[in-house]
Image (cartoon, rainbow, N blue to C red; front, side, top):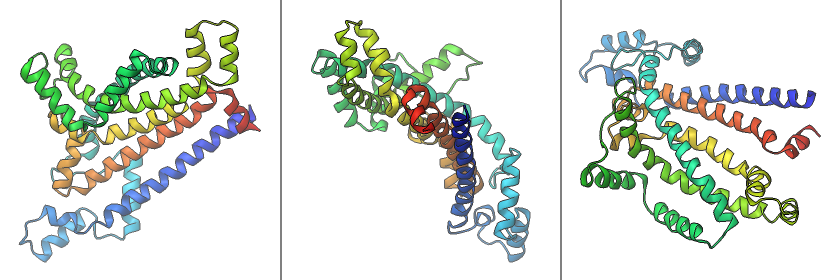
Length: 320
C-alpha cells in the first residue's frame, strides 16, 4: 500500500515538474521567434508612438520574467489572453474549436483499436493464414499511402463517384445527429488507417513472442480454450506497447489533425493554428502548444499508472 502511494506520488510530482518546464519552454520558444506580434497588428507605416502604445497595451514592454508570471498566472485561472488579430478570448476560441478535434482524434483511436486488436491477435495466432496475408497486404498498401492522399481517394470514391457520404463541412450533433456522424466517417477513416497499421504490427509482434512463453504453452497443454489463452493469458501481457503507443498517438492526433481538417473543411484546432501562424497571432499558437503538451503529459502519466494494472509483475518490481 505504501509502495503504491509512493509510486503515485512520484508520478504526480514528475507530472508537475514536467508541466512547469513545458510552460517555460513554450513561453521562451515563442519569445525567440524573430519579429514582434506588434508588427502583425500595426500597419507598416506605424509611428514610434503607435508601436510603443501597442507594446504597452499588450504588456510587451515589461521584462520577460514579469510577462511569464503574468501569462502563467492567467493560464492557471483559464485565461490564455486575447488574440492579437481578433481581440477575442483565446480560451473561448479554443473551447469552440476543441470539440471537433477531440471527437475526431478519439473516434479515430477507437476505430483503429477496434480493427487492429482482433486482427493482430488472430494474425499472431495463425501466422501465414488468410487473415494474416490479407492484413499484411493492406498494411503494406496503407504504409505506402500518405494520409492526405488516402483522404483525397476516399473523398473521390465515396463522395464524388458513389455519392453516399458528404465530403466537406461540419454539422453539430445537436443540429442533426445523422448528418454529424456521416460527416465524421471519412475523416475518421483517414486518420484511423495509419494508426491501425501501427497498432496491428505492434500487437502481432508482441503476441507472437508471448505465445511462445512457458505459461502460455502450459495453458495450451492443459487444454484451455483458445479464446481464453489468447485474451486472458496473451493479450493482457502483450498490451504494453499498444497502451504506450496509443497514449502517444492520442496526443499527436489532437495536435496534428491539420491536414485532415483542411481536406474535409472541419472547424477544428488544426485549422485555427494554421490561421494563427499565418497571421503571426503568437498568443494563440502559444496556447495551443501548451494545451497539446499538457494533454501529452496527462495521457503519459495515466499510461504509466496503468502498467501495474496490466501486469502484476510490474507492480512487484516497482515496489521491491
